Length: 321
Ligand code: SF4
Image (cartoon, rainbow, N blue to C red; front, side, top):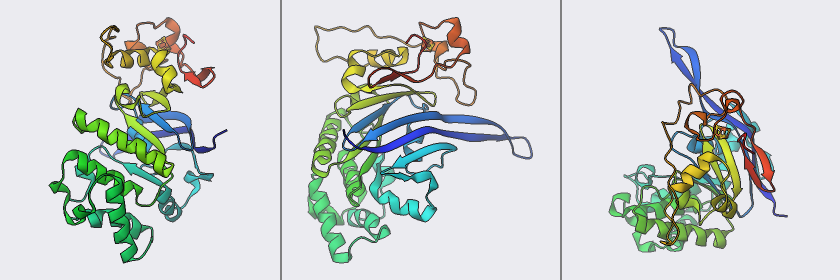
């Protein structure tokens, strides 16, 4: 059996809402409200949901860039919540992130060489000569010429900048990369090039990925398993093939109905969801999806469905199962 690299249990992030002249806490935004999953070594877990569902907050909590309110994060045998700030900084060598907007995440005043060298300096890896050599190697690995090392981020296209973002994440040879919407800001034609590069790098470096996206279409080919989040909770989690063949949760069915099928012989009815996502500051009682769900019953308005395994490797939070 493949080893588990990451396990999170009942992870929560409740941001306080303050008000009044004394700035008292008058409520909480439950951005992430009890999420549990595990990731095996070498696999890619896709996490999908509309904006505001808590997927990016979950990703940032795994690196403790946002401090969780509660829960456990066990990474490579270590309980990250128990690490001191100093030990957590050292652990980030094994745990890197690729961001959505490569332009915003690359310092415009630094050359690519300086940007890529920085993680090595932070973690005290190699001397100057070794670091510069590694920068040039990594640029070639991500499909850019080492000749570009002295250029600045604005001299690159969006796709090239994301390659630099990926190279930066790879500099410390991490075990896990959390990619937060890494292709969403790119043209469709460039998206597949970056996705292919990420797949090649996964094989070459034995990487494990958490791939966050708002679109089920994007994560389909890269993910071994996919988790769907809605209003701070995981509502369905299954092997990629199973989820796309037989989605169980009505929300997953709706998301999937919006993904175009390349085969013109096959037509799928688009399920248009009524209403907007409710506010995580004031989530509805019972199943958080009930106001938009075409199958809701009275029970759904009162009782929160538990997230349970209904078939081996397929979990769902819905009273229908
Ligand atoms: Fe719909 Fe009820 Fe299932 Fe929620 S629990 S998804 S409201 S059927």
